Amino acid sequence: MRHYELLVVVKPTLTVEELQAKLGFLKEILEKNGAVIAATLDMGTRKLAYQIDKFERGTYVVFYFTAPTAAIAEVERLIRITEEFIRFMTVKFENQKELRFWNKQVEKITKKSDAPAVVETKEIVEDTVTTEA
Amino acid sequence: MAEKRKFARKYCKYCEAKIEYVDYKDAKILRHSLSERYKIMPRRLTGNCKRHQEMVELAIKRARATAVIPYIIDTKKVVAVPFEQLQQ
Image 1 (tube, one colour):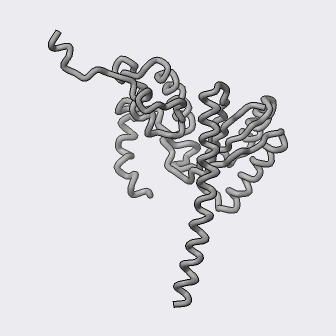
Image 2: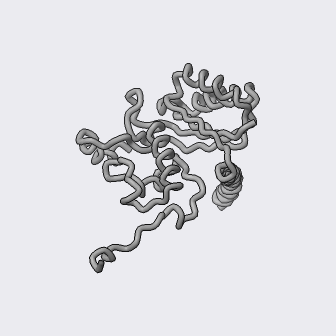
């Protein structure tokens, strides 16, 4: 098992549900090939530095996972076939310094994903207060 | 000799910031080692140490492939930049 980071650029034209479906599909592929996903980071839709397939924007999603080496070739093959993914980049993390960075990123993302949940509950509380008033 | 000491001594900014790994998704870190036209700046101009320069080079090449930073800015692209705010 090696540590990897996979960045995927998805077409900006998809709806939220379609996007989730595509990401679920990708996750399924990863897990089917023996990968354990540690964290996913949604970087949102942002402007591309240059046009890709006539698209000016793209949705960036990053996966951090551990997987056996053979899985990567299969996952990349399937990403190439799928039209919705316009770019991808797999990075291998090997030496100690790189692994430390990998762990730091995973920690950061898990912390962030915890934080918004708290904010949401607070908002709900505020809403109820306003309705009462 | 007096003329030679005119400028501040160059040093590696990545060493100063204690960056262990240069992330290709973070364009801000890479910007220091890029010229106006997004070419990779040589070590003799930026003062980067060899270890960090090699890391930055790799990160820049990855960032270009994933459209985080452009490969090159030419005259055609310069015209397109002022409309950036209008599109959003």
